Image (cartoon, rainbow, N blue to C red; front, side):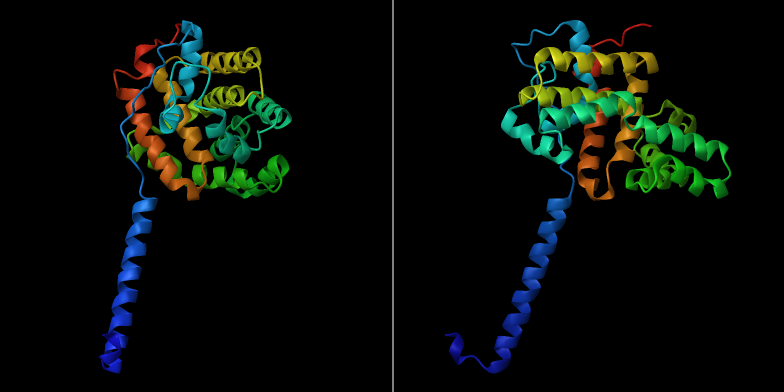
Amino acid sequence: MLENLPWYSYVIFAIAAASYAYRYFKIGKEEYDAPDLVKAKFNRSPNSQLNDEQLFAVAFYTPISEWWKADSNTLSFLTAKEVQPYLEGWGIDTPEGYWGLTEYFMKDGRRWYFDFIFHMIQNEPKENWDQLMEGKFGQNERAERYLKHLSTGETLSVLKQKGILTFDSEMQLGVAGYDAAILTGQARKAFTAKLISEEEAWKVISFARKLALETFSSWEEFGKSFALGFALDMREDYHTYKEEVFHLYKQVLEDDNSPWNTIDWPAR
């Protein structure tokens, strides 16, 4: 049938097909890139045998474990197959890799970046920043990203817009909450992948618990510190993931069924 059409009909047909394809893939990409803002489930295993201290510490990772749809009351985290890409992405898919990063997070973590850069911005003239940054970090992409977001107030503005932070002074909470959450989450995943023993996992999580208790006095303080560290640490190309975790974070903070509302923060 098409062979009987005049030549310009082919041109019109080609233009229409190209236009359709453009709109299809453009809309498809926008939908693919759009955050999937789901409702938190707060899944709990009926077979959990964790005590109150263990449940408290495991809950540090709740905003991210909700993104994974993992149980909130077990040491194990989904399955070894499901966590393997994460472990590989962080370079912790071997015992040596895991312990190397874990020892870093225990000793310094993202606190190493935030504490120095935040103090520098508050107390040093801007003309000294390049020299101070070079002396502390050398050529370091993460350090430069922290400096950009902290010095421009970009991260503070975003967290205020989302209702996560209210006052500028809350930046002083730092990012120890984020470090404690990462230590806990990665210990759970490494245990699930049989990279570390149950005893080793609890030793790491106990360190995270101690760090959190020494630094914060409530889930609200901890959560703001977690959100600040998460916002600073995720690169710009993780925008969709960040929006999804922030959406879950608000539910973790506010929902009555959240571990942050069913487990009391221990008194100092």
